[in-house]
Length: 263
Ligand code: 1GP
Image: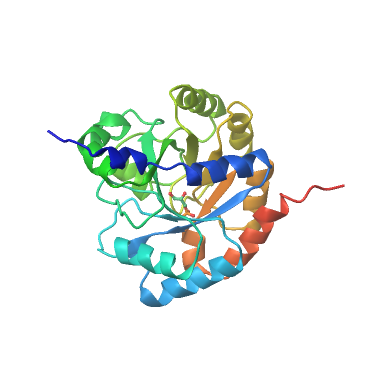
């Protein structure tokens, strides 16, 4: 039996989600750099943090489908000690919770039919998540077929949504929004061969009011730009940056250039 002190509820915050909503209202596109704690160390994370701060990255997402190292807490503390960029957990499992972060994407895999990832793991971890005091952002997570089996599709044991079935994506996102999700995250999976099409992004974004996050297989500033033009509010890039950190600046400029109204 878990009993919560009232200050646990008081600690629940809304700042990060409010910032995402405000940016959307102002038609400002956001860039989230994804950091997988398994793929960074004290040396390269400093470079990523510095480049991200210089490039005015909007958010850090931290997490991975499979985090096998114990670097999560340390990695977040390091980010927090060096920059004010908000850190949002993007957990592949309930074990990837750190009180050092600012918020948690509370993911329900609404594109799949695996009850464990729709609600099962949430039930088991609910007391722990609530006690963390983190800002919790309920997120409808949709995995789209990226042309290759990715870690997320294997681990989730759920079929990804077919990449050419925009109508299914639209209905899934609409259902997520009506169920009360605060964000929709469409993900082709880390290192996807085919990132999500602009057609699908356009269809989904024009049918929901909540912010839309898009990630998976985005490797160029051009693709990030086109995704934003199609209606994505937040672009997430991980893999490409791990290979070439100089892309942070280029992709950030491309995404933020969408903010400038063309006369
Ligand atoms: C994966 O959306 C993220 O869950 C980012 O994908 O690593 O391919 O950029 P990439």
